[in-house]
Image (cartoon, rainbow, N blue to C red; front, side):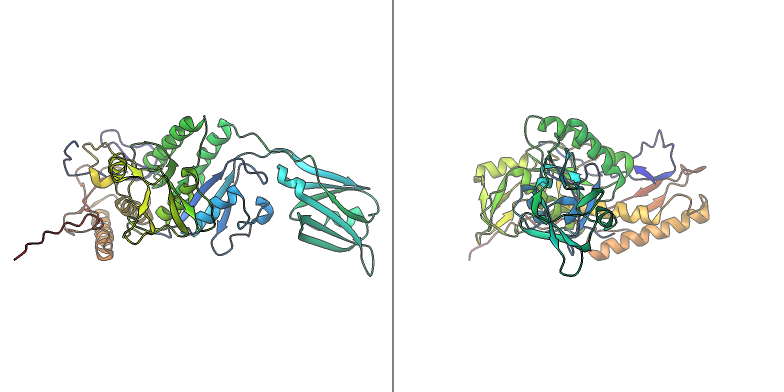
Length: 446
């Protein structure tokens, strides 16, 4: 279904649901399951390139055969997944590029890794005599056995076994082999086109936050491309999504700019790019009534590049998301903000607060769910029904504590004069509830 923002003077061509959030304040110059994160695995050493692999918190290792690693292994890509699963329910990973497949011929048996990448060179094939008949063919990854096919005698017998890790080909009788590694697997070179393909593919899935841990000389161009894609998804496709990017002054409410990181209780010091995985999950997993200001970083024992008071003040003014110490010495989020720092006619300073953004996210989901094209008649009867549904949504959000000061009779109205043909216009007023994050006390002594 089409969506996004709209220009009242131009309208839209495609049938769809279009939403504008417009601030009523003048700024002085100065409902669905959440917890879905997307992470590109840049430079991963195995797996199918160019597709989303869905992992869940309940069964994080279910796609071990595609990734070539357990989520719990010491690996820089698996680290991103582990950090995101501290808060996320679902993680989609996307391998940007893989190289050639590892392979080996053992007698008349050809064994080839399912996917390209140097990790395939760690696969080992053992062919041992079966106590009853034929051979037991086992596939190892390092010293860990992955699968065993018992009592097979020929290559033809193996072809139909459905191995999750390798493909079998060739002909003839099997022969015993104490253990032979596959070889020739290489890693692919990640190109700008791979990143472009990944960003374009985001349109095909539903998610809440993207962790985009890009570094290196191409990072500025990649960050700009990501911002353009997120802006397109929000404003043209109607997906209320956010991206978490390291060291990027995007000045956009759809981008969270992470500018320091943490040391984990495992001894690992994360880069700013790696910390993006946890921040994306933190954003995605929070509800419309939660702020992550002063939220504790699970498993963090220290801060990498902690900011002084003066640096923290400047960073907040610059729209930076960073970690600091609480009064109790815990590593916490300093302020749950996005990178927006320039306010205008349609956006006041509240738009820089991520709790407010999650209210917008939830409202968009509720509106899309309740106002699909062709559900209501575009006449007085239909308008009355639509206003009733909309008012119900606002009241529900007010009862949940997400918005406040709802005027049911005036805050959700169909513009009946402008609504003609197949176009229906709505005027909706909301005031998102933020958290009490700056507390000022005046004590009068007597």
